[in-house]
Length: 466
Ligand SMILES: C[S@@+](CC[C@H](N)C(=O)[O-])C[C@H]1O[C@@H](n2cnc3c(N)ncnc32)[C@H](O)[C@@H]1O
Image 1 (cartoon, protein in one colour):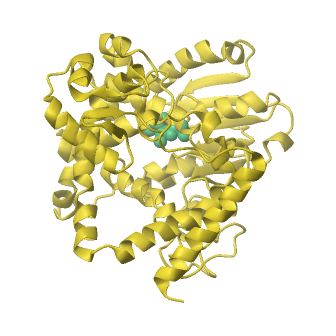
Image 2 (cartoon, helix red, strand yellow; image 1 turned 120 degrees about the horizontal axis):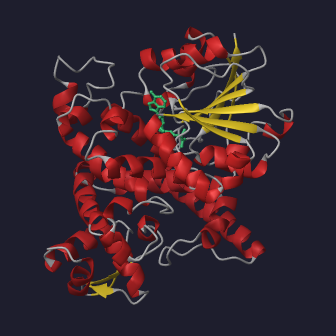
């Protein structure tokens, strides 16, 4: 069969399977036109494994059919979509559209509502390119409304409140609003200088967290997290912490609970969430596993914000000593010596090998013989076959059959976006299985297994003292 026919077959058969599952459950597949709600999107999770090959095949079919020059120009031109999108998000257009309801708003009315000195005609052009990428809908000439994708950026508050208290714009915002705002601010600006940075002999080979594109773009010599603590960066720091807390919610539901038997840990076992942020991960565990004790460690400023969040959302955890919030620099000696689990979610990927090794070595020195290390991180697949790459259980990622790319192509591409994000902002890396295994053993840990949650970006990398 020709490649294009084979790709079409994968799409057809996959769509039929999904439709049958939806018919059997009596729930329609969520429409792109309606705003996102977790309830209306629930059916997607049930068919996520069926959707992966279809997404991979559809993108490969487009790449095959499209005029090559068009493909490369469109890919280079994602910067235009980002520029449009960044402007729209910054101007709180999503919230104005939510308040207007499904009939949408004319761009002139949007500009009045958002109280920004913007040219409505240019805003229409920005919204139109996004609508063409299925973000927003143009429902009549120059009249736009939110759809399932754009509505995820809704900060979830009245527009008036956002305009009155811009520093608190992302506090308690659900969904991806905070996360995307990092991408269109820090990442977007760092991206603009990346080519200069990576071909400048004074920075090209650096593994220092303060010699990255972000420093070049922002004219600072502070590493990202120190820079967040600088005066003037209050919004960025708050936004980052909210983004991380909310990121737990746009994983496959309950992902943190899967692949590691938290329930089997004896009563009173201590789980130390190292670099735990304001505690989104610990909160998800705490809500289900009340028999455990938790410690969240992070930088002082973050722990202060965590204090407010837990006081508001789960005050009893602080009152009954189930949870301790502890300022701690993970480049220094680890104070907790009786941890059952050192849990690090999306921490090790932030750092270059040398820095990551220091963090892991401090944890190894504080580990008891029964301590388990649980890294919750991406595991970057190669874009070719990985057969026989490692015999550690779970090491080999599920691969797509030909003619699809073994890594499911664009269906699995987010890991590489985040990998580049690490080059831009932190100096870390989304590591392959081999790199993870080498890093762990260089710090005295033995990789035992990788527990994958189907359809999820983050996996559990479980190690014990070597
Ligand atoms: C990518 S975030 C992950 C947060 C959290 N684990 C989660 O998944 O939501 C990395 C965390 O590392 C923290 N961090 C950075 N440098 C640190 C340091 N030297 N000591 C302790 N925590 C640090 C940051 O403040 C941030 O909360």
